[in-house]
Amino acid sequence: MNIIQKIKKQIKDNIILIYMKGTPEAPSCGFSAQAVQALSACGEKFAYVDILENPDIRVELPKYANWPTFPQIWIDGELIGGCSIVLEMLENGELKKIISNTVKKYNI
Image 1 (cartoon, one colour):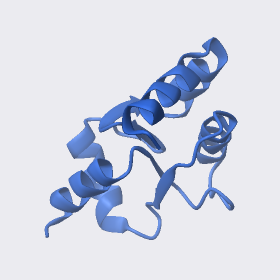
Image 2: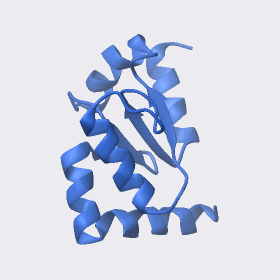
Image 3: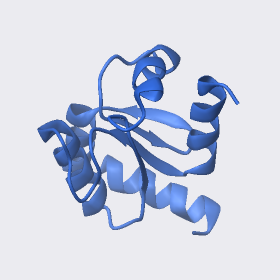
C-alpha cells in the first residue's frame, strides 16, 4: 500500500479524523491543541494520526488534500479545514451540527 492509499484508507475508515502534531492527550503545537479542544467539545469520539510519527504522511497529505498546514480535520471523508476554520465552526454551532449529523448517518 503506498502512502496515498494509506491516507485514503485512514480517511475512509475514520468518520471523524484529525491529522495533528502529537496526540489528543499531548498535542505538540497550539493549533493542534485548539483543534482537539474544538472536536472534544462536540462530545463524540474521533481518531487521530500524529504526523510527527508519520513523516511520509506529513509530506504527502498536504499535496493530496490541497491544504498546506496541520492540523487537518476530516469528517465523513471530507476535509473540513484547519484550526481557525474548526474554531469558527464551533463558535457558530456548525461543527457540532455536522458531527451530530454524521454520527446519526452512521448510527454510531
